[in-house]
Length: 75
Image 1 (spheres, rainbow, N blue to C red):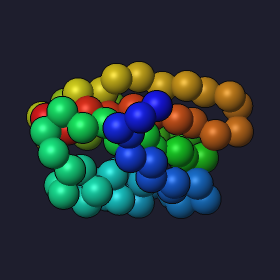
Image 2: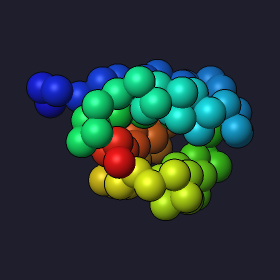
Image 3: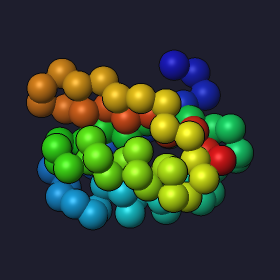
Image 4: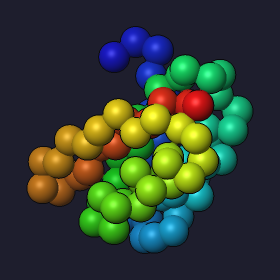
């Protein structure tokens, strides 16, 4: 989708996907969407929790079994 920024964290384990997402979101404009690709199953819980704590909006998850695709909107 246009206007989205992709962050590939495949192969990284907790807490690295969240830490990398946090770093990337810090430089993005409010309302921008970050798409995070991850293979760490812990990210299913970690990403929504991170968004709630940091003031971002968790837009959802697509799970194809191998790669998890999270959509986060910068708060």
